[in-house]
Image (cartoon, rainbow, N blue to C red; front, side, top):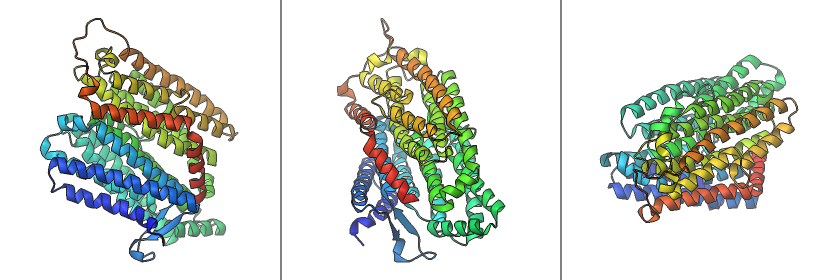
Length: 497
């Protein structure tokens, strides 16, 4: 075994161990440890991705070198390494962009706790990406839930505590359904290892037995993960959770947490149930319909909002709908579009949340649109960044959102049964996106004769400005150099199958 094949295990364990270390370190030391760990995990993921591109094959890694059922397995392929790398990049930039607000909004005695939660969140996300065992996946789903809940309520005011409780209630409902599905699947197959379960499911389908229990199992796991990832109509917890948590938490929750659950669902579709079996269950049609509804109703709710943070949060409901629409198409092209949109949405939504806080800071802390008038002139860096993120969400060429919508349109054309509703809703959603995002851009670039708020310069926000520039570059790279990334996604999905 090549030494590089240990990197997924190293990344997960390093993230978990650093959380323990941060609990006893001074605040600044804990911050440095967090930054270093996320950076190291990203570097390891990049090296692993290059290695896997070179070999062209995935591999499994036995934890402790014990085979199942006594040991757990990690599986690494091109798609897993790409997703892990991207998650690390987004988490690092989100933490850097929200560092000043963390100092302002969280009491100093809880900074260590915050870094512990971030490290646990990274560990759980990497485990969800790499795990080859359903029970291990469930364990890290719960770790992810607890860490995300802590990140919401770390600010500790009435709105964040209420948002955390609502998030926990809905998330535990989703976790319970996922666990029931895993238990039923274990009862049907006698396995927890993904590859072994898939072999047993294929045997069940060939024999024509247990079709109804298998259908219920697929439904439980799909709906459970849909609830946890805020698919419409299970999204009621999302606006408050994203809208009232501190900015780095909002950026990570919107970009990473929900995407970790969606990626786990994709692994279940390919590596546990089997793509053909899942498509034949018709559960995929339900996800398709809910995805279309989320695209419309998420955007309508965003239009009605007068709070910039909650508007961005409702936009996430629509964007999650895009991802489930692609999954619901039941084609490789649709799945490729969904995976790319996970990357596109993560890069863009984090950019929007980080930029929005810069606009509110120069508007007296107000998040109301009337107070944001001319904010882009008072904070030029945040104004440009928010405009770039908005153009990407609308689907303007040169930005990542345009490639996402192009891929979804191409996937829809290849699916005659779902082409018409997908293209119609895609067009309507794009128009609605333009309404609320361009309305906001016009508002922040509307000049005011005499502003009662002070402007801010690059000298006063160097780290923040550099973070925004990195987010913009990432978005543009996804927009103009998308083909190599799409090729990697297609190779990774082929390895899944």
